[in-house]
Every structure is written in structure tokens, then in C-alpha cells.
Length: 198
Image 1 (tube, helix red, strand yellow):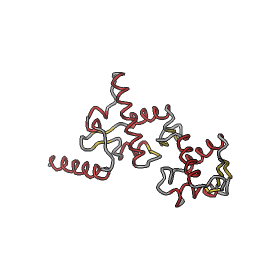
Image 2 (image 1 turned 45 degrees about the vertical axis):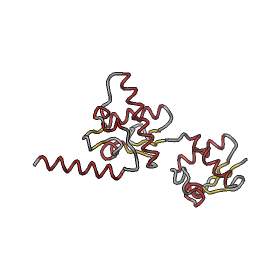
Image 3 (image 1 turned 60 degrees about the vertical axis):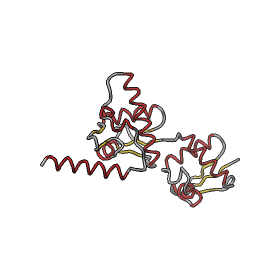
Image 4 (image 1 turned 120 degrees about the vertical axis):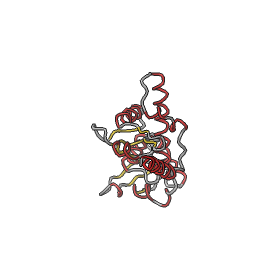
């Protein structure tokens, strides 16, 4: 009967929540109107800020760098709360992501706005973290491959470990502009090298 379906969706909601239990959702997440963008400007601004904070906190916590909007709308607990049977529409998600793009905290992968890269740290912040790592390990004036920088033992446990190549390359380009590094192109991206300067 109908009761069975309700129990099934509640069980699914509990399962989803337990899979993401290492992340603490804000209290607003359990408030149904949070999932409908509000028409009153002042309320909407407060709501937008809460959503942007949640998106950045969630993606940072789970080290998510890219989102497919349709997939995230359909399956991600970031945008759907099965416990209260509410979800944010794809249109609302795009509006919020547009705000992150305006702030330099996200970038659309195409004009179609189907995928987005989330920058929960700015390119400059990533550049600083990478440079500090090289400096701390005495790797200044050494050539390091992009592979070792992203995946090597020395970077394991660092915030930039397994950071997508395009973001790492932009961070290195940022360091080049500051004369703190030079990038040597390899046969493929992983073979690309970087030398840091003091």
C-alpha cells in the first residue's frame, strides 16, 4: 500500500544521510522552503548566501571539483533532501552556480552550463599552497613533474593531492606570473615539469 512507499523513501533517505554522515548539513537543509528559491529580494539574498556556503562546504568536504548539473540535481544529497522530500530544480542550481561563477569560485565548462568546476579555493590560494609545499620540502630550484606534484608520496595528505590538472596548471601559471616558477611542457600533461624559484 501507500505506507510501504513512504517507508521505502524514508529508508532511502536514511541510507543517503548515513553515506554522507561525515558532513554536517546546516539546520536550514531540513526546512522545506530552503529548496524553493524565494521571491522576496532580502529573503532570497540570505537564502543564496546559505546555499553558496553549503555548496562550497560540501564540495570541499568531499573533495568534489566538478559537478554535472543534471546528475547532481537527480542524485546528489547536496541538492535533494529525501528525508523531507524536497529538491532544488536544475534551473535554481544553475542560478546559484552562476553566482559562484560571478564570485570567481566556479567556472562553467561550456556555454550550455551542463558542467561546472568548483573552486572552493581560488587559483591564487592553490598556487600559494603548492608553493609553500615546495618550499617546506626544499624542492625550490628542483624540477618536479606534474604527476609527482599531484599524485606523489610527498603530496599525499595535502589539500592539493589529486587536484585536477587544469586547476594545477592554472595555479602554476599564477606562480609563473609572480616569477616563482617556470613550467616545462612535456609530451603529455603528466610529464609536464615545474621548477620553483625562491
